[in-house]
Length: 126
Image (tube, rainbow, N blue to C red; front, top):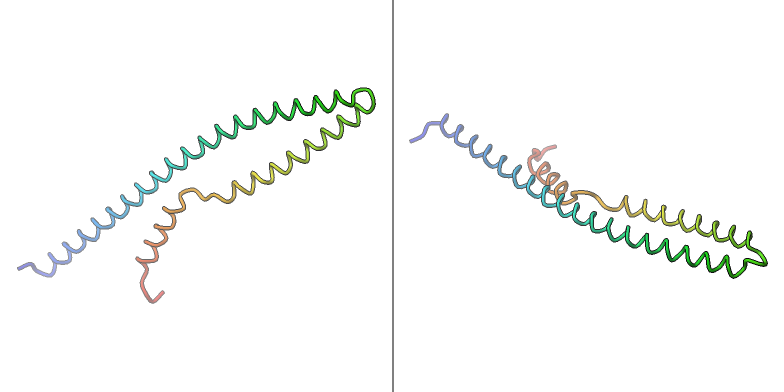
């Protein structure tokens, strides 16, 4: 029959083993989330880059068409209007990109699980 000291040591070992297992699980979750987020961001950057290149060519051609159409009458006014419209569109896109960048939280599931673990380990009277 085991004595009280051996029971305490055995319980401490089990507690440490459980803490190490929980930490390893959380670390593995963090790594999986990080890899998924990295893949998503790489795909997003590639698609956005290709789309922006095509969009810039299309906008350039459209602006060239508009300027050529009004070359004889009001070329400077048309160029100024096109430039102003591009500045307004660019400002709107920058604001939208900032809003999207704030929305995504990196490794949200890992942080949620760690918070849950922290709450579970706190004493009941606090």
